[in-house]
Length: 368
Image (cartoon, rainbow, N blue to C red):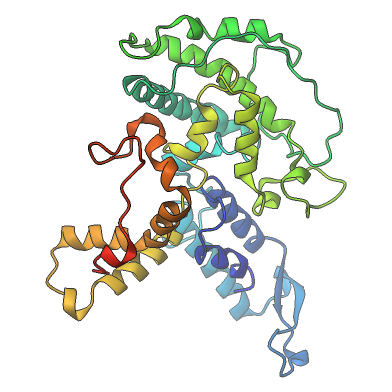
């Protein structure tokens, strides 16, 4: 319980950006459980206080029952997170879903901490997602494709304090001092493509070339971030790990990247994908989603609603789960809802200049 208590707390909240950090949390929990020492209850010193005293005990000195409990806990974690289907611990690695793989190379906290052996696979999945995302954006005619404008790179300080440790051996052919012009040239003629209504469909190769340059610049920009600007209470005098940045304000980071690249000529659509694609860093952990969706379903499926069919239950549960979010958006961002990118907002006919039509709370029928 002491090993899993902090991780279990993450299941009960959606306020953190956990889309890319789930597997890393699981890896940390498994590594702690397999470590040489465990914090166990200090039985002789237990008092009537709520917090139980603990002591660090070498695994070799655990009782027979303690060793069995530890081995069963390791097996359960492997079965849950590592794809182990046997009854014996295999030492297998934590599995990533496709969404988590894409999120890992989109989240600024993790993009440079991906394991070297996984970097190629994760990058190719992101490339695939980028091509699909960019193609869809072009079909909807918003936003215009990134313009290939040359700009001077701002040199960062050499101080590594507040930066995430680089663990991925990216296979970049360009040096750190590569000029912006060379980078843009390697991305093809993105700025020369027709834009707006009637724009020609970009080729997959053109978008793939654009992705190569954008992703290279995105990684380097994330590597140079000083995370103390976004999360002041961090360990001192050492490089950080992604798990140190659980509480970091990642949306401020994305906003900063967007402001530094207003025309999309450096990072392409990657900052937008970090919050609006399959690899969204704001995605819930599966365990968090299961907790919340089941709680919402319990509220919806009352004695008065027991005759709802399966589809109706799914729809009402999803609405109930997001009720507070929808109320917040209507109350604070109503005028902006009609300006969403990619034409995703449905606005009543004739109300385009007024923003979305909003119902008063008194006019809403509380079905759930």
